Length: 315
Image (tube, rainbow, N blue to C red; front, side):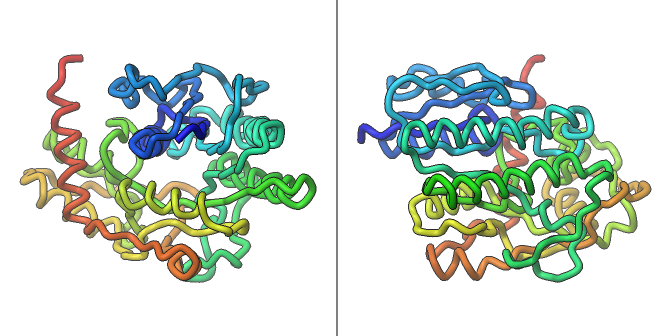
């Protein structure tokens, strides 16, 4: 297959798994990353593949990829609260300028474009579960606003390019995803809890722990992204696991699965932290035949094994 896929943020958690998937299917893959939150470790195993190339570049600046490009997947962005609170301006720039540049590349090459959006566009939702026709409840000037509004703008400009320039665009709203290649200091619930449990530290639960999330394993997610990419859907599509659980339940599950003696420590809930999060996946299920298959315990087992190896490796 002589088609080329460009993945911005390709050295990140999700981007690197997409790189593996499309290389395994015979595509040429070019990943672009400035490594602000990505890591070359995530793509080191494909470095010798003749169909793979890496460009270190900040996509907030003009993107130049020589030769034909058939698909552009825009995954560049800090995606964890710890990251977008540390890099608020970079988060806004990659959501606005980076999306504009990635769309410009797709337009210049006549490529299909896919935007990695997020469930955070729904903010602290007032409907449950969240459907794609819900417009959200977002504080634009709160601490999470830099990420929420960057992605909301990214969706708006993506649809504008679709309607004005007739580019074949896709938008996936990604709900909480986990698996190998997440960073130890990622700050999100699963890597944080696993890291703390493996070190015998108390697990940090914010609020009373009764707020909910839905966790999708990375293999399921990249399969869903691929199905949307090759579908005829242009409107936003939720991708995630509708199996909802409380954060307290998750913490107890990870303590059990790591055989840890860790206790649970409660901390104040951060401002604007969503109380519920559960995707309605009716659209992708109906149009693409996709739904997650990996059970939480099975996905957590693989993720814990990955973290054990990372923590045991020499610094």
